[in-house]
Amino acid sequence: MQFGAFTSYIDLAQIVLYAFWIFFAGLIFYLRREDKREGYPLESDRSERASRVVVQGFPAIPEPKVFDLPHGGTQISPRKEEPREIAAEPVAPWPGAPLEPTGNPMLDGVGPAAYALRAEAPERTAEGDAKIVPLHAVPDFVVDLRDQDPRGMDVVTADNQVAGKVVDIWVDRSEHLVRYLEVEVPTGETARRVLLPMGFARVSRWAWHNSVKVESLMSHHFADVPGIQNPNEVTMREEDRICAYFASGHLYAHPWRQEPVL
Image (cartoon, rainbow, N blue to C red; front, side, top):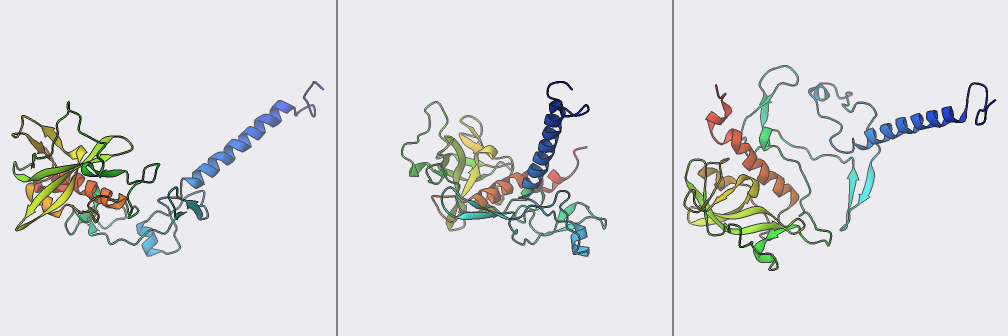
């Protein structure tokens, strides 16, 4: 037998190769289980008709694990999701048919307005401070002189009406970006302040007479933008609801947006 051979048919190279195959298969199995810590088991029409059906695939969902969060507290994963009422009905009787909203589609969390039930707490920086805050709360942040300062500008919507006025800017302290514009919206005798995601705003000095243009909503929709509880912080769940509201406007803000182009 040659050097490294255990028998006339098995040598060290074969054993190393087989060990690698076994290790790699185990790694795939482990990673496939771990990526099921969120989103599983899947909800299905079959689950409602037959309680014995668990839509999880192979391999099965792993056992719950407790994670220590960096700024205190713990999180169990996979966790039991909060029950949610879906204000929508299938458009056809077969399983998997598209859902049609039955209420206000921009607030009911259906389709493009869907949002995740994230934590009712603000996202934190590495130092433990709130990550997204208004500009007046961080005096070391300023608007670059080469950029447009939208504060004081009118917010003009898709129907060419003024929905409100920008009163502040919300910045990301970790990435030094503008995340939201705080807009004061008149509602009768009073006014409320809402957050406008920067991705849905176009700041222009010349167009619309020095204003901020928002194409996804009509002016009357600003009265129903989901609000925030703390005037100096925004929770992760509030962020998702606000962004979902503005995103859904591209489909639900006007009936013709839901119709085919041709």
